[in-house]
Structures are given as C-alpha cells and as structure tokens.
Image 1 (cartoon, rainbow, N blue to C red):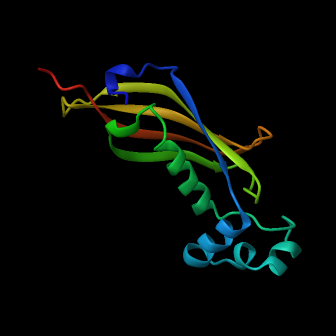
Image 2: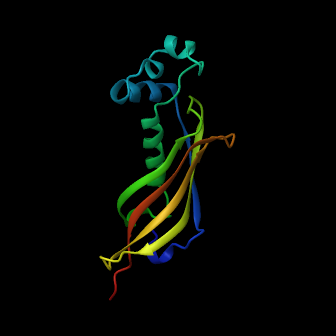
Image 3: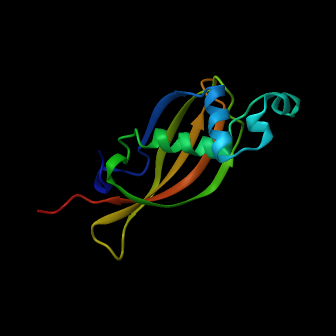
Length: 148
C-alpha cells in the first residue's frame, strides 16, 4: 500500500489479465445497459461491430476492479475527484484479456487538508494484443502517512 509520499511522478504499475466472457457482457448489459447490441446476438451480429461488444459501463467497471488490485494507490485512496479525456478507443469483445497501466503524471499536497494529497494519473487499458481499449486521466485524493 502506497501513501502520497511514496508515489513519485513517473511511477507506474500494470495489473491484470482479466478475461471477459460473452456471458459476462450479456449479464451485465441485461441489468445495467440493455442496448440490443449488448444483449441480443442477432442484433450484435448484424451491427458494424459484427458481434457482441461490452458496454462502456462494463469496461469502466473492469477498470475499477483492476485498479483496486494495484499497490499504486490501493487502500490509501480517500476518493476520486474525476476523470478527463475518457476515451473508449476500441470495443471490448468476448475473449479479450485486459490489463491496466496507471502512471503518475502529477501530484500535489492538499492546500486545505494536511492529511492528504492529490495524484493525477494516466490510465491505459489494453488487450492481450496491445490494442488500447480505454484511456483517461484521473485525479484522486490519497492519504498521507500519519505523523507520530
């Protein structure tokens, strides 16, 4: 687990070998994003994508799941501030194995709260073929070490 003081600009971490299944795409989509292209194989097969693709919301959920497995920030996160430049560069398809890279691109101590700092990071999710699926810039509040 890394605290604000442990993270330097340029630090990065890659996690995951998350394999997505057709069943997961359909189950998630039925509950959270029931667009026909995500739910019905007949519609998906006739689409310009030629088959099932994951919802962008599922792609973000996988990003978050992988993110929580990192030591990059891990259990020291207080909360997310937000994302900018979020891009779904290519669709996620059944059988894709996804990995995520976080790279610290900026950091600063909080000016109003001495127990935390802000980390800005670049996120990239890729397939096993190094095809970029998702990219964004994130900003999170991270705990500082407790002073004794």
